[in-house]
Length: 158
Image 1 (cartoon, rainbow, N blue to C red):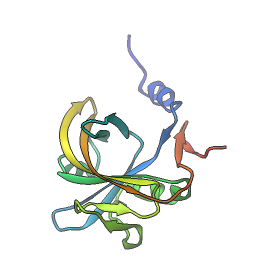
Image 2: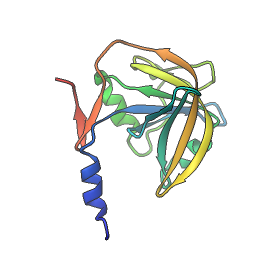
Image 3: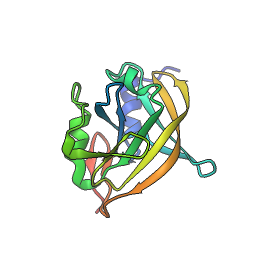
């Protein structure tokens, strides 16, 4: 049986998700961010999370084996940030959007929470690379409602 890719994408879009920014610094120290909704918890002991990166992403080489990174869970007030860093060619972080964390990765200001991670394992996953990260530090953030993505658009809790 063949699955139509558009039908699969639309159907998967019916699963509501949170929205995150994954941030790294390149070899020159320049901070970058990419918007993802493929974030999930994996294990409490050891503390593991995962996210996935499209194989044809323009920033694939920057993220695919980054030893240290951070994942910020965005608030409903950060839809503009999400849209900005989801735009092709717009991944260099604005100085107003971050601080540097203990592991050297950018920590997104005003996010609900940031997880500082080190790469535990990278696995092939079809047209994506699955990145398993070990959480080394939790940076609590602003108390606010989460930014949600559902059926192709941002949503908010009622």
